[in-house]
Image 1: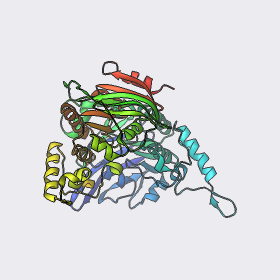
Image 2: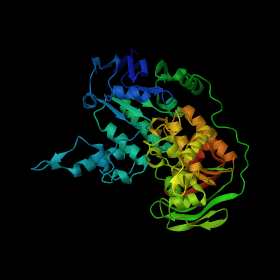
Image 3: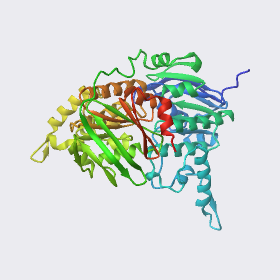
Image 4: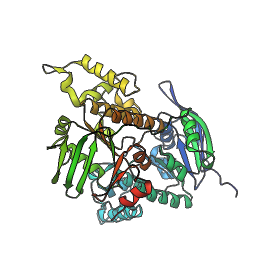
Length: 498
């Protein structure tokens, strides 16, 4: 078979910021109908590269050719019109608008004498797109009321609604469970069969080797190479990305679970979950598995006091407790790391120090005044203990990598000395090297006697870290599996029960 000409060609692309080289002579060549994975750790230059491709940034030098024509000085609107679209890792939605309004933003349908916006047509089109993706999200629902996973599916629907020729997907499955990932991969195959080229960015190795035809690797802003996916293994790809071999991804654990720390009995919240029963012990990781909409995050939010419960009981160390707010949960010894660290876990503009101490300010106060030196000392200790890489405690957290931001959130939660920590998607959107660090941290927390409830859409992560796994389906508990009983097939069978 004669190879097709390249649809997109990037040659010697270079970009600097204030004298710091973000990209140095990077190359990329993508053919029609190809899934081309772009791999690299956080900080490798992938995001800068994609911003250059879609016209958000202008390169210092180098050339971008699309269908043989230079995209020099093209802006985002021009790039979209040419047929290059992108699903961003950080979702770009308008919370107050509906699902349909977000999907067709800038491409609204009008009708009638005065050319009013036609919501009915827009809603029908959005419903058809969402049905094609296999999700039942009402097109007239406000975006602010959706879960992170549902927002991600709306972003995917928005991207494929364009007459797209090159589709860039930046961590499109970061909030999706395996069943939704399977649906997405089916959509990708449909698009490639029509000649659409897909540039796919993900930190999930199993996805890359399932969907990618070709892999390009960046490291520290440098082009490392381009390889057929069939010529690489997970270990060889990791070595290309990080420049070294990684230790065992999931640390061996010899910790034996101790006394029961927290239990929930017949926990129910109308419309979210019902009759949930489990217990987690000191030095144990209890996994919560399920598909999108199964109720995992809703259960966590209820335990932490973010949402109310209609019925059921929560026991801490054998005693019934009442939790009406996160303040109650923190006082009782329960910590929570949200799946959306930037919206619910951090204040990006504030420093590492302030983010770490924010949840426990009374510890650093005397007579109603915050003692800055005491704060700084605590922050430095947390940074050292959690191996947070930053210029110092006063660096704004927005400039940290995703993995280091997640460590800051965990550090903040640990400042209250919790007996139980709920980790909701703790490795969402972070690279393989940072994942390894988070896994080591979870192992250390477990060894220290903390009880951990782990929610993850990545089954290998759940299986690698959990001692037992609770499976939810449509708000109901369908299984409680021991480590020996838990396999990907078993979990999926219980997660897909009607």
